[in-house]
Image (cartoon, rainbow, N blue to C red; front, side):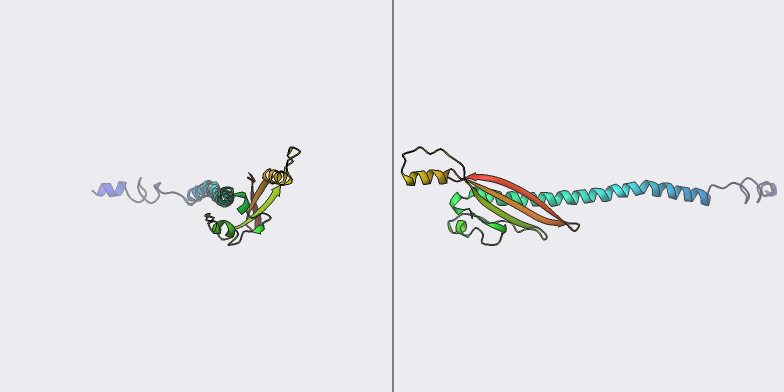
Length: 173
């Protein structure tokens, strides 16, 4: 027993001067630096991907708002489409269509989004046979016109104005 303590004392293989199973301060610092250098790109990718997802989400919202309005306009007969309407869409813009029994309910725009509608009548040259009564010629000319409907959705992203346009046409018949 005495011999065991003597050979394995403070200076023995497991004593104070013996190598230990611990890390030195330099090894710990190098490990921390390597981990930090590996985590910086990972966090950078996560941040960039979050911004891209947010941007894509805003564009999808804008596209859905514009599509909803254009589909509503396409479903209305030509006389009920508010020709010459320009500017931000206000409540009651489709009062004539609602009075005629058409459903024109639009979803409210999310905060920060505005919906603008521009409606124009585009005349198209048509060859109307000569010799027809004046009323028939005028009716044929008005029936050959095309209604152009442009929807503009505006919103702000990081202090910059963003805009999405959707344009469609509808025959006036």
